[in-house]
Length: 258
Image (tube, rainbow, N blue to C red):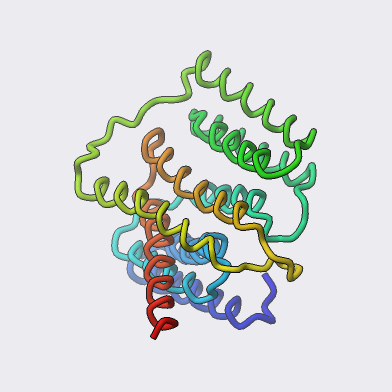
């Protein structure tokens, strides 16, 4: 975080204010800190999805404030994991993936899979590696990371029984809304990825890499809904990201056209 940027200063203040409000409303300091951290990570996710527009992330962060009114738990580590996956796919840093980048995220994926007894985290990592390989020259470190994650996924799924379909009520209002938003997000990202974006070094970001990370985000959320016990507060954050970015992008285009 570079606090010389006004947007970074604003989200830090916003997160602290929400954390304080959460402490008052929920009655626990830890719960307030979790909700405040959720606001910050919502902003971070939105910046990865829509690096072109600074303030769409603030709209998404505002929507995630709904967690103040219904709080159970927020899986912060899972959100952080998603951000890391998107960053190694979209190339927004302007740097090639290093051995440490790939294998630290692989290590986190392995930890989440064992800790939650769910191999879906490894499948997502395999998908991220596939997206990198499709667009770039085959790299030994990417192929090695892909092979390890795929092998562990097979072991955990078929020998340890770590992959189970979530038999939720998919006709409930919350699930129907979630699936509709996820479906529409793929259309949104197709148009959003056409925006010209520069990486941290000022070089143009390839549209495919940005689009791949955007699609990866929605694919991750869909897989987590179908194959994990996704916390409702996390779902609010993920949907806030999509809805916030969508509303800002549509409004931006309408104003620009006028």
